[in-house]
Image 1 (tube, helix red, strand yellow):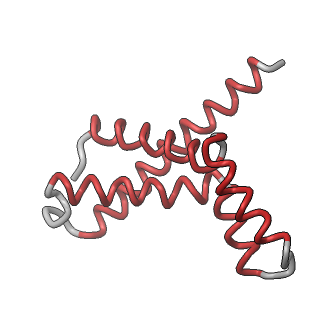
Image 2 (tube, rainbow, N blue to C red):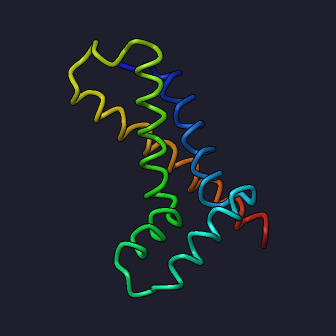
Length: 114
């Protein structure tokens, strides 16, 4: 099971990874390519699903947090030390903490921009 400091670091990494994937300008060309692809067939449910996935901090954050947690558990040799269900709960914890950081960032951004 991951420790509290590991949870904090993974949540911060999940937050930053989510910001990178959803908002940061460095990935604008990739996102614009996907948006252009979707605009060629806007009635496609699969394309709409992909756009929703890459535009939503909750959706993207869930998968990024899961990937970071899995990478950490594999790299640190913790994957097989507890039942798989515990890792699922850890995934919820990491993703929830990362989304909390995103919400704080959004709220502070709105306060500053007033």
